[in-house]
Length: 287
Image (cartoon, rainbow, N blue to C red):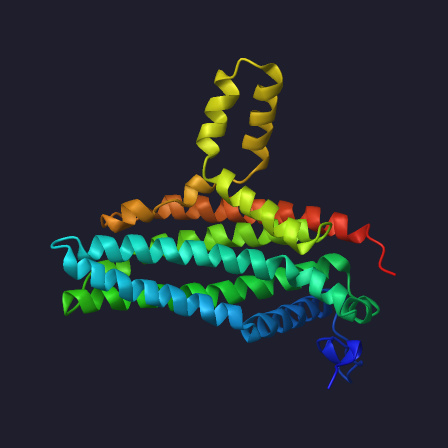
């Protein structure tokens, strides 16, 4: 039985005035944004690809246990290395393939027209979608991280301090996924899902070679090449900040200052991405 555009729209009706007075605009805006985020989270959770990816990561962790038992003295290193790497890779897949469809699905199902017919700003709509996917990723990262921690406890046949020490690294992985989600959302406002996914994946790959871009910008003989590399270095996210999987596999956790700086960088970069996405989205005509 098909669902009408209005039925598929989240419950975003404006509230009627109460006897105690109407809530101010900022409170209504926050409530509406959270309603959009909650609806985006529910849609993402219902998407079977999320469960498949999480299950696959947990299976990889189980495989790491098996490999670790074959490698004397390297069990924990293999589990952490393989588990966190799988968490990052499949988290990126979730961020890309769900993120690029956040806007496109609403346009394709024509539910966007019903949503925007209400007193909802386009930037507010994008922010709600972004927060909903970030919440989805947070749940998935916690589940996958718990799987890695339990694998460490199992391989030790008892408590292992690394089961807790890996969580700062997991936190940095989540920060990186927040940026990738913002990038995917930005591209989805003006491009097709396939091209948006490809561009976002390129940003993810190039972002891990940020230091190489800086080196190329200073050593290239071509002026144009130097300018291109320098522009890419400053425009693309520096994802090497979040690359702590190898140290975590050796029992080295990032310090609190590094985590705070990484969090601040994530927030600033995501704000810029969301502002850019809102600017582009506000200029699109939907007929």
